[in-house]
Length: 132
Image (cartoon, rainbow, N blue to C red; front, side, top):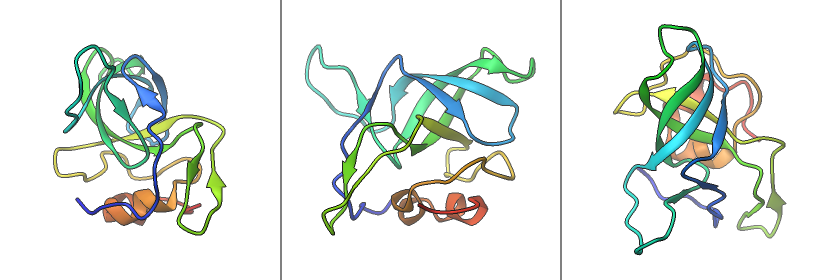
């Protein structure tokens, strides 16, 4: 996993509901953990753009509901700062389902993905319609 060029503010904590922005069958995800998070006592594990999270599928097809899955966050509402000084934020919190190696389970992504996600996960950038 590569380092990100931007200073990503962690805007997603455990319990956050995310929109599933791919065609894998899931519609809504709930974050139950953050992969690789090492934190302090009583602090909620937080994640930002490009982080891999462990989720529970809350809404979607019967075959994927009530399952624990891994997902990569591609959009977040919380603003973050890019190296050129601009601040970027999206209209929703969205993720896509991936396997352990970061290869997407779906074949297409609905809506744009952040440019920083494409740096860390090249397979995700390959199926994204646009990187914003």
